[in-house]
Figure 1: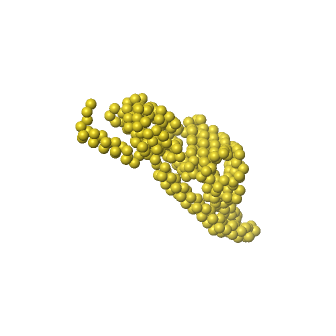
Figure 2 (figure 1 turned 120 degrees about the vertical axis):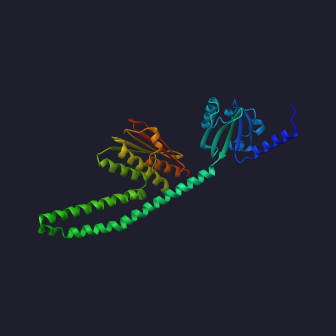
Figure 3 (figure 1 turned 60 degrees about the horizontal axis):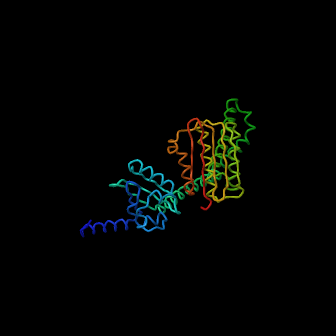
Length: 332
């Protein structure tokens, strides 16, 4: 077979475009055999082969270490090359995106390194959550230092004239006592709000004491049984991690109390060598898996975990309760 100069020039032009593409590019035939690969794809996949050596190899063997991609490509080839997108696959200390598209007599797979974008999103999310926590602290201080003393003073003043109530009519005396009780109620509510905004026990004594206190308060209501287990965490974590795990636990418990109609909650903190795990379980009515992506509370949990490069796995089915596993790395 002979090729004219124009055909050769076009072929070289095509190879040049593929090689200079700003992302990894691999072309495969109908059997999954690699026909073309650029150097960028070799670097992203951490391969020692040359592009020429890669040609003729099966794509499934080349990406065997990346289980999610291997499975997706295999299924894709078995289903008449249906297109696929895999976002944020962590491999070789980088976050990669894989996309597969159908071409004549084969498929083309592109690989992009989105680590920088991922880091930027992570930084933005961390800043957002940090800003929210700073605002919570400010509001807690305002309540504690501003409204709290005013109510305490008002309550003290009313207490000083309580003895004169007997000289009032029965109707006025009753109004006085009800007003006094309402002020007492408002002071307790403000105390509770201030504590929820920024629990003092968390900043003073750490995550474990704060979670124990939280669970004890819920148990005191006699409405639901909460069990807390600490497995191996005996030292303080950094403030950001402690606060995130505390807020996640609060959110999970709040969701259970509001929606699950559960009788029991089990909360466990597990200290491992490289990470901290928060395990949560309730025996409530559960929910369908598709609702996981729709609940605002669950989105808050995922955002807090992502801000610390953590992972969240939530499993629930109707009438079978809910379990959640949150894993936060300790390397920051």
